[in-house]
Length: 110
Image (cartoon, rainbow, N blue to C red; front, top):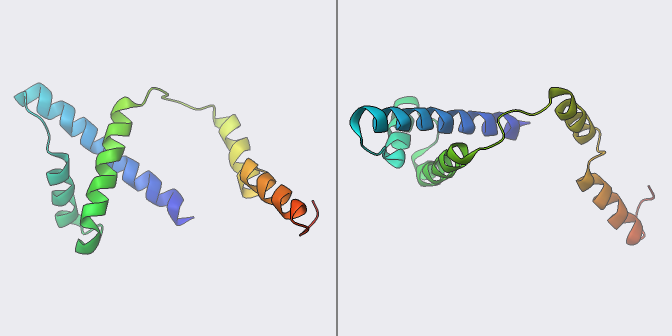
């Protein structure tokens, strides 16, 4: 469950930086130093320990690129709800593959 929150939090930071980058480009004609901004955010809010700062900066930088290149802007909420329900109930493709592998190896039966 922690990953659900972590993903949302990191994407939120990335989206903030995309907005900031657009403002910097439009107002000053310059380029935003994403790593420096991530370090500043971490210094101000203490999001990760110093030992994790390089990884955090790299991951946020990757997410900034992802957010800037995002094409899909919306998912159908009912379809996504069905997907999440199947995921929670173990009816997703990963669970099906695990079950098939177990059966093939003589483990549990589906």
